[in-house]
Image 1 (tube, rainbow, N blue to C red):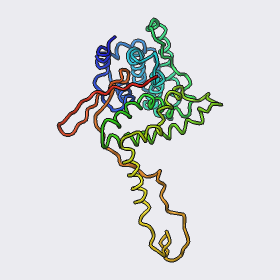
Image 2 (image 1 turned 90 degrees about the horizontal axis):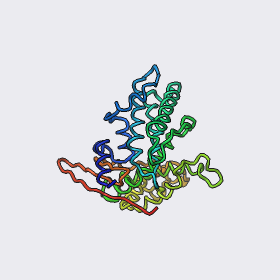
Image 3 (image 1 turned 90 degrees about the vertical axis):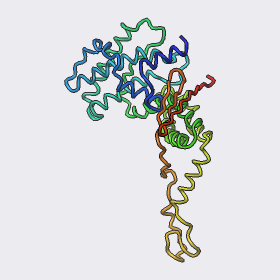
Image 4 (image 1 turned 120 degrees about the vertical axis):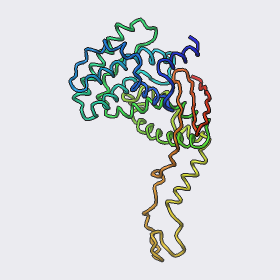
Length: 310
């Protein structure tokens, strides 16, 4: 199937992009788009939960539609991201939104019923598909850090879009995604102990593919790196205040000569400038980013293609 036809199918199913990053846009549509949900309602009608039953049934229909559309169109040959695991995490995340994260007595059985229907749908409705089926991940409820793992899956999906936006648009876009990559560096640091050569049992599935895009390898390549570095240095210097005058100690006690060692700011706690948000999103499966930057009445749309050697 040609690229144009795939784009047409994706846009027909999910509409125009609503968010900048691919994972944000897909989840927005996964949560809000109501088109064709009735097609899957009968498959989900066996769900029986007294509290918020209708919302759980609706979520079930969204899962089945995702299996038939989004997952079916993704790259199964050599994927750089795991859209199946994202579906699992998004389903579990949505149940936490519906019931509240403390109500595990409702979340666990709801997730179990959706997974049962998910398995049945795989076996009966799409059993002849030519690609590997997306299977439910039954152990999410045992992962105390499932939200961090969800974030890691989303980064594997988003890094090319974020990098492209930072590199291809000057000013606040680069600043915004410079800060984005800085925050993701902390996420990688969290998972490093789980992915040591001696013990990888709890290492995220796509860690090895994504580690080549570790934020620390990306930050100094961004066109605004020197500018952001200087901003942070200037902010740290401003926070520190003027240098003490001759004969005056750092704490303001004249002639004491005693260093306090206190009051020095931690540069890691300094906040960078928060840039404005422009409309932009992309098509994850086709490697197409359609950017819409709005300034008053001016719209500029461009298409960026990303690829890299496997």
